[in-house]
Image 1 (cartoon, helix red, strand yellow):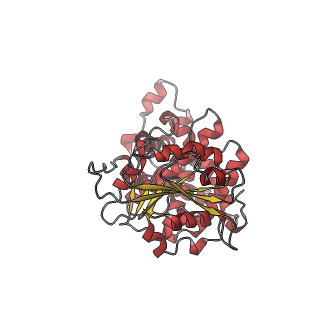
Image 2: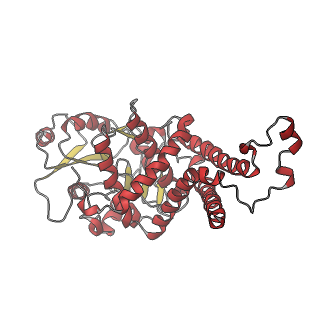
Image 3: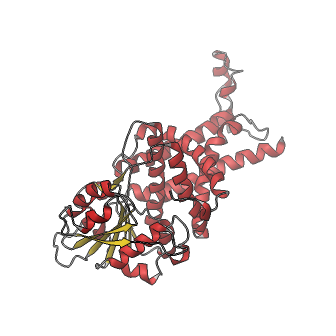
Length: 404
């Protein structure tokens, strides 16, 4: 018992300290971040190629392409990489049934051996692109305004070669949708904050920009071309550094996407995404592991630690509840007035309040992706998510996970 009286408190207090370091030292950077505004002078703005990889996405393309065509930017094109579609996508693009002036396409008839479909399609789209900057999105995404391109390009100043955008999921009233949106918020909170702290480690392909010469100079997806995922996060993880990454969080520069509708398809998607995390740099795996582990310990260690009441703990005189007061109201045997319990509860609620305030500020900046008053509730569920998917990820082989 003596061993646990020391170990459990050490784990709990260490987790709280680690969490506060990340919250106050890293996440607050996103809370205070302000995007660079675009230049009003359109002369000299770089050309942009929007690349969309599509497999049987005809109906989505009919909605997306007019929105891309309507973007207010002086020099851009849209490249659709038609990945062996058999739903009429090819004919629609070939005969330009939408009467598009900015849209071009490349048709993929077959897939090379050992090259996954999405990465090959994106690579062919980039090869077809004629502009110096590549802007990626998916067919099921929708820009929140016609300033999307302009706002993303505005962040690519100086030595910046990569811009990480934000792509929330659309809202419905289901519990699965709420969890997906909170998980997406947490993911964005981490990769955007770390990028601002000079430790970029991933991006999301639904809203991601980089220079075309960077893609070719790093041999594209060559190092992970056989993995289903990684066309966004693994690529950014390999080519990013503390100087070449910017972020764009403007409400007008977001790409809204449709989330999965069933638990099974969402779990399959998350397994695919998380499995490639094993290929991240050691530094990034360590930092993300610290965030996840400290988050879980803060929640799951609360009850064991608060009930521990170690023999070695003696509260300072100034912090004790006067014995006279306890006796006056007949609370002297009320266990919850224990000095130790009040200490642990105070530390826990201090951490939770700080986290709640900072995340609520970031939530406002990210256009209220979630409901701020529900953050503590979903934060607990997210700790369970960490636990379940952490175990799943450890035992997942990214080469054996199916795309569709």
